[in-house]
Length: 265
Ligand code: KIV
Ligand code: NA
Image (tube, rainbow, N blue to C red; front, side, top):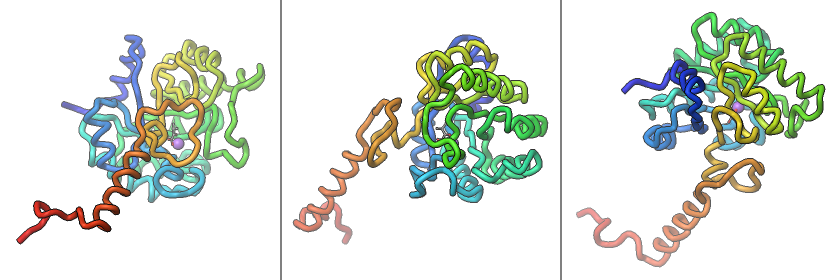
């Protein structure tokens, strides 16, 4: 079976079918999600927080993104893999964006890239699309701009809502195949979803978007500390791994591991 394509994604919106997207940062986890039928996996720059130990997405480099994107591509057979363009790898303009996207496509093998910004990233999106690289937009809360905007709900109030709609249309007009709406009021996300022909992918955007994305470590309960209120926790991996590690340590200390069946002679 072939990989999911942007055409499959477009067809899903025509049919009114909703779909799920998860982040992935390594081959093994990605293979689990791929085998579970998740159609689109995002190698998000949330790897900064979730995988690399930074305290935001800002420091993540294109080299790190390329390495982990390649791992996710190698670990999967079916999902469309979307690589995130990192902060500083596309803001200089379309030429820089194309150079960066080409690395993710050619060196890592991703099927699409994502970048943040609506009207402000319009030219970059158009250039990549014209070069044959499918682009996913990302508007609303854009974490790479944390130093300017903080982590707060976007699109509240008439003026901000109108800007979000303009951003959504700019992303679509530039040729993107989908757009992430992060942390925007549910009514506004619904309006954007009705207005656009391309699918909306919500995170903290309510139930009306065409798709939903969550950061995998948040939804599986691996993240230490608080996760955003829009996250539903589907597992307690932190508890599971912690219990197993403590049991292993106790077994070693007490002599229960290794047992005879774990020995070679
Ligand atoms: O990096 C990421 O995980 C993302 C999603 C939250 C959309 O950009
Ligand atoms: Na991201």
